[in-house]
Each structure stands twice: as C-alpha cells, then as structure tokens.
Image (cartoon, rainbow, N blue to C red):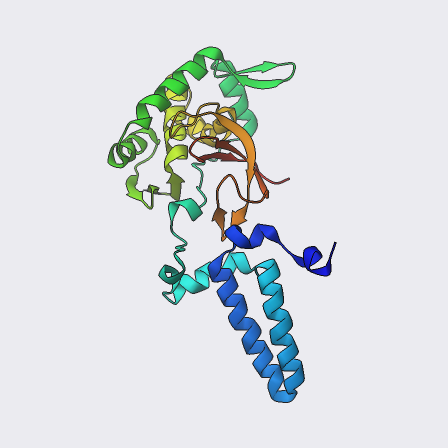
Length: 265
C-alpha cells in the first residue's frame, strides 16, 4: 500500500465529497500558508502544497469539519453555490417525540397492553399489534403533507402547531419543538393510534414512539422492506443508505428512508 493509499479517505472523497467542507478547508489551508509565508516563504509554500494534497485525499484536514463547514457556508449565503443546503430533508436528522416517562414503566405498560410480548430470545410486537400498526401506517402513507400534519396534531397528547417543513413536519408544542422526517412521522402517528386504542396513557404512548420503530419491518413511507444497514453522518445529518458505514440504522431498501437510528453505546 502506498503512502497516498494510506492517507486516502474514500468515505469523504469522490461521490461522497462534501463540497462546503472541501471549500472551507481549502480556504483555511491557503490562509495559514500565506500567514506562515510572511515569516518564511518556503514554509508557507509547503503548508499550502501539503494541505491541498490532504484535502484532495481526505476531504478535509481540520478536525470536526463536517459539523461546522456547512453551517458556515450557509451563514454567509453560499450554500446554493454548492447545491448543498443544510436544511434539505435528505441532510437533516429527524428528532424524536419524547415524554418524561420511566422506560421500565413504558415497557411494562406495553407488555400488559398486549403491544409487546417477551420471548426467550427477546421482545417482539404481538401479531395483533403489528397488524394494527402496519394498517395505520398504510393509511397514513397515502396522506398529503398537510393531511399528515393534521394527523400528527390530532395524535400528540398536547396542543401543537404542526406544519410541513423541508420534506418533513415541524412540531411546536408547549414544551417541545421538533422536526420529524415524513417516514418517522407516519410511524409515530401509527404508534400513537395503535397504543392509545389499547387504553394506554397517551404520554406513555408518546414515549413509545421511538422505541416502537425498532420493530419496523415495512417502510412507513413506501411500504418497502426495512432492514438493518448503515449510513454515515454527513454535515450533521443522515446522508443516505449507501454511503460509508458510520451509524447503524433501520432503513428501507427501496426508497432509502431512515426509520430508526441505533444509539451509540
């Protein structure tokens, strides 16, 4: 293996290259090189040459670049130049509906309500609950963004203003301000409908929305097959199913929708 091969980071170059990250790093390399060049021109030239090579091979040289470069480019109004907007749905990470409910209380409630069943090899949805849940998702799948927004506002156990926003839904409540992707909003409303119908406290049902998505087998968005796969965290959000492996997720093999992101230990 050559030195270049050892330095190369294919997960951040080629088709996976983030143009704002590259541009910001290139500018920083030139500025540092010019500053050092004032003191000693050869050193400045070396810094610019080596830095440019590393940006080409690795995508960026400044640690943490994906977390700040797109925001910086957006702040100065240049995001459109790169065809990369931080607020695009494809680059946003969905939040979660949450409630201050003890996880043990939530689990025992779902077990007692017949939503989950505990077997020797783990927890599973009961057949009846899965049928009801997937049926609710199938109905919501055909809803327009405005209809889905109304369904979310009706399902959450608090007064909320819900509006279509960047391909998903923005939810503003008394103690909650979140953005949900459309697939996750469909799954979560279906969860609330299915669980509350079993006389579960609405706040417990709200707390169950994210955990329930771990049991998804059918894509809420298109009805395709959901499987465990990986994605990379690009510019603060999910970049798609077929990028370099960074985060384990449940994603649709057909439309690429991210249904659930496994938390890092």
